[in-house]
Length: 252
Image 1 (tube, rainbow, N blue to C red):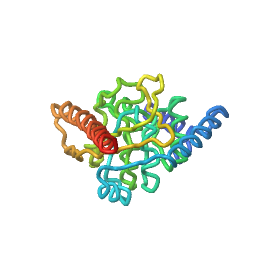
Image 2: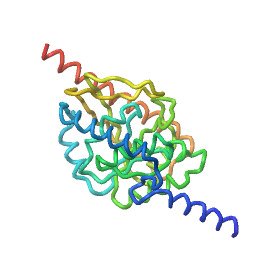
Image 3: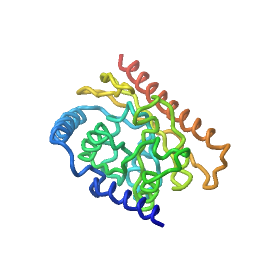
Image 4: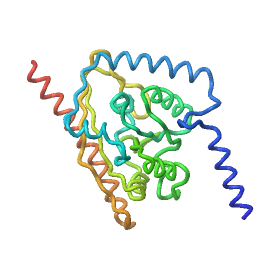
């Protein structure tokens, strides 16, 4: 009993470090300043961009959704690209508790995002879930769609961690892969080669086929669903790239 009480006290103490939006309460002026400056820069760039979704009707339905049906997944390197897409849709993103995670959270917060703090590894099956997994499930029940980069926060790049399969199984949410392609951008020298759009860029976004994971998931099915999700994200990116290439060829 004493052990359980101490565990609960530890969880409560961790919760108190973050506000109701998932932002750290005691954060440095440096992070506050840079998050504000980066937001202003990105927001200015987005206003000049040409953005196209390859499934406009589905996109409209997604933006109107108020019931927490989906888990949106895309590669960590594309984290700056869909930020402005879902401003009108209630959603929560999984972001790490690291300094970089706090910076990303504060930028995305200004675009309408809310957060569960953790990482793809902290909701892994091998680690038994934990607070991040429980918070994500509860958020979906409260009507939030969920947004995850399943290869984050530290990689390996373009490799899905199996915790997302467990999340989909327990929450009942469908996994919706997102693919992106952009013309006129540059890459940061980070582990994932984060893509940064340039002014007047052209962005193409593609929705993959929704993936449903059964509630009663057999252990030998875990790897199959992980591979299926990984392949679906890759395919979504290829279709977005193909669409952008075809349009450029027609113009030329």
